[in-house]
Image (cartoon, rainbow, N blue to C red):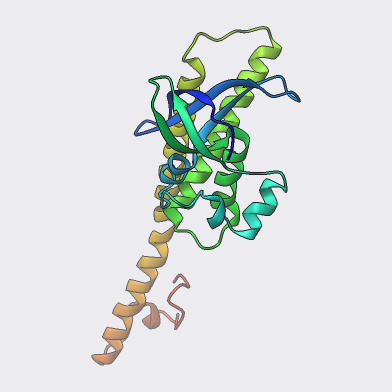
Length: 213
């Protein structure tokens, strides 16, 4: 059994309507010098509309395991909360959590579009917020507590706005095709009634519903 860690729990907002618990034992990664922070596997899965047991190690696909690497393991043990009680939590490091979402957003072919979209949004917003912070640090700028969270939510909102604009553009582009189909149908009805459509009266004929007069 893994060593029981004393963890502290906090929470972050990935999107305005989604809060995800995050955990830390205040360990420092020997390679990066950064604190090791975690997400719960069930929280990661529910964040992208997947069943809460999707992140259990026994349920991971071979492709996802390969992406995570040979040394990957889900931390499965009892973790002592600051309240003194013990609770079962299956924890993933932040880096591995991003790989999990990358798999469901860009690699898996057996996932619903809604889950894929949510996973992609998390990856994109995380990358944009992180690059903003990194480049600001390069110029000696500092952030007040909560600013990184604001950036994350702002980029998520922008992702949603861009998606809405794209859908509206697709609808606008589809309208000429719909009108062409309707014109072709009406011309066929005129022919069936023994008439001659106006475009044929002036010497133009076409059986292609998408070809303009």
